[in-house]
Image (cartoon, rainbow, N blue to C red; front, side):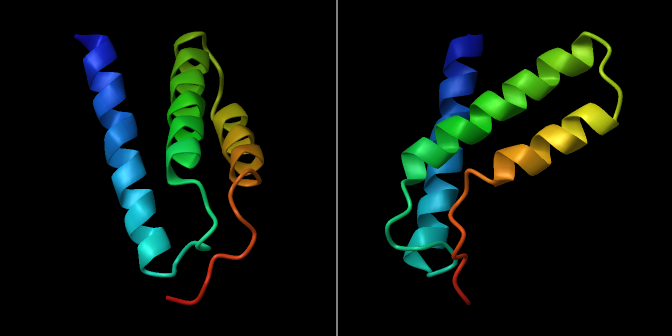
Length: 77
């Protein structure tokens, strides 16, 4: 059940990212599926770290690092 939920989340992320690519918000060459999987993995990791007692600063710094994987050219839509 949890696997299906996680896969559904990735599918939704992929759809939304692809919509942004199509709208010109993200560059045409961006890989929607890879960005969605990356986002899901980061969120899952952040969740695990929170359960292990990480303070607020840790997920915030992780989010900053994770965003560096996104395309630099975010378009002008």
